[in-house]
Image 1 (cartoon, rainbow, N blue to C red):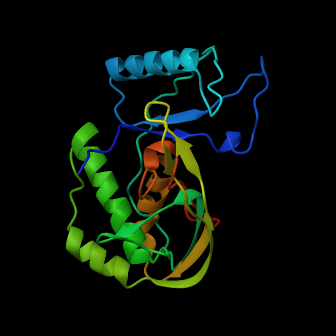
Image 2 (image 1 turned 60 degrees about the vertical axis):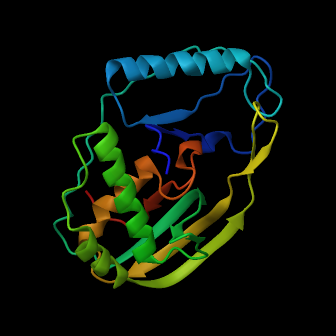
Length: 218
């Protein structure tokens, strides 16, 4: 199993867009390894890629500005008020696996397990260590959460490799799912997945999700 990369791209603003010559554009990157040398190295690589050409037509670009906000520390404490219902929006194509199979629906137990495992691995590789939780017991509690509504649709997206000339599928499902049950302790995990992504091929921006419910986290 390959170790997850220490970054994910965030470029939903470019979906379906054609950039004209001389036109400015931007995209985001979430870095999980924020040591100075890692950030500087990443900027150099992006600059080199831009000069070589981006996108299906390999249009060249010039890196004009890099904004570096202060590192964000995710709050993993549950909200003070109980949460019994939650709607999760899957903003970019998402693929979840259970065992060796890609699942058709984001049942909460599977969704949580993939988020939990990703956060723990990223912490072990690039942070202060893996999650200090009882994986089995919290997984069992997540499996008790019921999906009350599922409104998702498949999206077919491909990526073209400049090195091999091959096309790779980076599709999945988008839409939303609603869950009911004892959800309070899981809120920070779903919020964290908005930054890290969940599921397969997150490095390309897949698996971005967000809670759609007022007053969960003020």
